[in-house]
Image 1 (cartoon, rainbow, N blue to C red):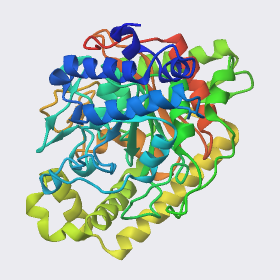
Image 2 (cartoon, helix red, strand yellow):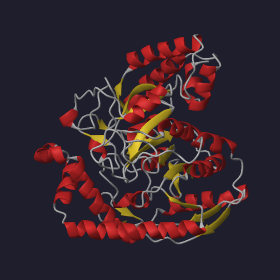
Image 3 (cartoon, rainbow, N blue to C red):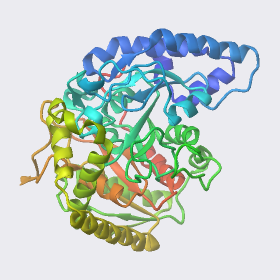
Length: 471
C-alpha cells in the first residue's frame, strides 16, 4: 500500500492491517513522516519530531508482530502528543521560552497508557504558552495555521493536534481541555475532539490533581477512532486522586454497534452562552441536529441560558492559573501577555469572589442536571465564529456585537467545563467559504459512548472531506 493511502486510513484500520500482517508498523510510520515532511512547513502543527525514535519503536513493533506476541489496540499506530503533556526523552516545552529545552525523564500517565496500547509517539503538537488561549501561537515555535486555510487559526489550545489530524499527518492526537481546548480546535479544523468526564483519563503529573475542569482526552478524524483512543486512555490510577473506572466495557464497541438513535431524546439549543452565534454556523448546526430525527432520535429545540456562569468561570480559571503557576510568580515578566494577565487576575481575587463563583457553578450544574432529566443529549454550536486570521489574538465581535474579553468567544465550551461535563465537537458541515463547522454534543457525566455514537451519525450525514492541505 502506498504512503498516501496509509496516512489517510483510520487508526482502527491501520491497527487491523498490522494485526493481519498486511502492513508493517515501519511502513505506517514512514508514510506519516512523509506526510509531515510535505505539509508541516505550511501549518506548523508538529513542533518536535522524533522520526528516528518512532522508526526504532516501529521496528520493535514489527518484531512483536512477527513473534506472535499479544498486541495492544493501537499497535503500530502513530500519535501526536500535545506539547504540554510530558514525554520521557522527548522535548516538552509547554510553548514557553522558560522550558524551551526541557526534556522530561518520565512519561505522563496518559502517554504511558498509550504506549502500552502499542501507539507510537511520532512528535509533539503545538500549543499556546502553557495552553492558555484558544489560538495556537507561542514565542518558541510561532503560530499553527489551519489546513483548510493556513492564514487562519487552527484554534487552541490543542491546535497543533487538530491541524495535524486534518492535514493527514497523524491519525490520532492526545490533548487537554479546560475551557474548550480539545473541542474548539476540532471545530475549526473539521475533526473530532472529546472533553472527558473528570477522572476517566488519569492526570499525572498535575499541579492541581483535584481540579475537575481541566481534563485530558482524545482527538481523531472520526467518532469511532476517537472512541478507540478513549478506551486506551481511561481507567483507575493510583497516581491520580480523581481517577475512576468507566461504567462501560468499550466505548468503541458502543459506537461501532450503533446504527440508529431510536429512543434518544435530543435538545438543540441555539446559544447557551448569550454571546450570539454566527448566522451561517447556527444554521448548519441547527440543520445537523434536526437531521438526527431521520435516525430515530426525538429532536426538540430547547432553551438553556447559562450566560450568568461566564464570570464564574473566569474567576475559577484565574484561581487555577495561580495554582498551576505558583512556582513561576516571580517570572511573570518572562511569560506572554495572555498568560501573565490571567495569573495577575487570579492573584487579585478574594475569598468572597471564589465563594460566589462556586455558588454560581453549583447553580449551573443543577440547571444541567435538571435539563438532562428531560433530555439525553444537548446539541449546540461549538465555536460561535469561523476561523479568524491567525495573527489576531481572538475575535472581537459576533454578528456585530463586541465581546467582553479574549476568551468570551469560547463561552459555549467553557460553560460545559464549568459543570465538569463531557462533550464532543464533531464536523457538521462546511460553510459557503469551505470552512468546517463543529457541532457540540454534551451529555451527563460518563455518557461518552452515547455522545460519540450520536457524533457518528452527524459525521455520516454531513461528511466534510479532506482539508485542502491534507497530505
